[in-house]
Image 1 (cartoon, rainbow, N blue to C red):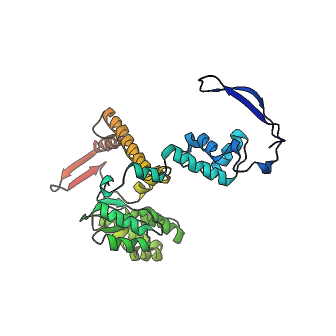
Image 2 (tube, rainbow, N blue to C red; image 1 turned 90 degrees about the horizontal axis):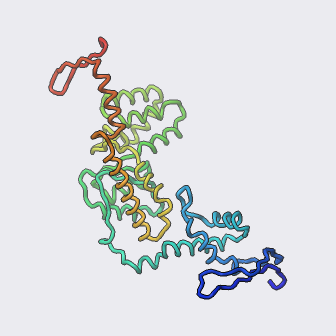
Image 3 (cartoon, helix red, strand yellow; image 1 turned 180 degrees about the vertical axis):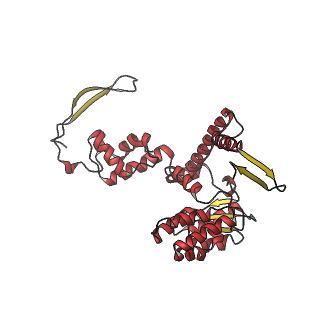
Amino acid sequence: MDNCIWKLRAVRRDKATYFHVRSFINEHTCPLEEVHRCHRQASAVIIGEVVAPRLQQHDGRLMQPNDIIADMKTMYGIQIMYNKAYQALDYALSLTYGTHEETFQKKKISEQSLTYSATKMVNLSTFSCRWVPHLEDSGGAIGHIDDLVLISDHHASIKAGISKVFPYATHTICCWHFYENFKKRYHIKDVATIMDKAARAYTELEYNRHMEELRNLHPNAYYYAIDADPHKWSRVHCPNKRYRVMTTNAAECINSCLKFARQLPILTLTEFIRNMLQRWFHDRHIVTQSMPHQLTDATHLVILKRVEKCNFMIVNPVDWNIFSVKRSGK
């Protein structure tokens, strides 16, 4: 503005990469409404260059326009509108990671250029309204596996999609989601806990004991669990081996680790995943080499405690896989 006394004069020395400030008056007299998004002293490009080095926040999430507005206010005393902050964020992302168009031009993505890692145990998080293409893509990547087990929450639409895309697979329910549903539906103490113990039981005898306890405590909760099909939520009744994978925690953990990277271009995302897994494998390899025992420290400690208890036990064989164990006369 012509009537604003703010002024900055600087000159560059010969062949120098810096400017020498001759005079500076740090006082604005122009009205606030004149500082709009096209103001050259606080353009989206300049702000984008400033925030580009710290796009990833301390909690792992991507910086949002409101974060940029707050930073500009607290760090530089500049009040900007949301539209300019959004443009600055978009420019900072393209400056740091490139645009989606540029990444596809650099390398043509094809089915052969992406490597999928498929195991016999797959975790599925809750999909949005467009989850069917994700299931179909997973089906093409995993292929046909006879004893495939899929784990998801108790959602009818996911069940229908899995039966269509993976008709040969065993669909099971995440025990944590099932446990939370019990807590919301039945507010009586210990109902959800007993159900969770039944779901994680390794033997039929243990399962029946917990289910009988559940029926005595709350018959409606018992029949709700039976109607939900124990083959889907019970470890002992699962048609295929579910091992110790009872929840979708693995998938939720990966989603949390990719909270920031999922908003980046596809090639940057794949490179982020590669670096993350490479770092994990390296760190765990270093820890493995430094362990004094063949087992992990936690497992070794558990075995030591059990060995100490075994010293006070008398074991007599009954059969080749059955033993009589006595301790303190019991």
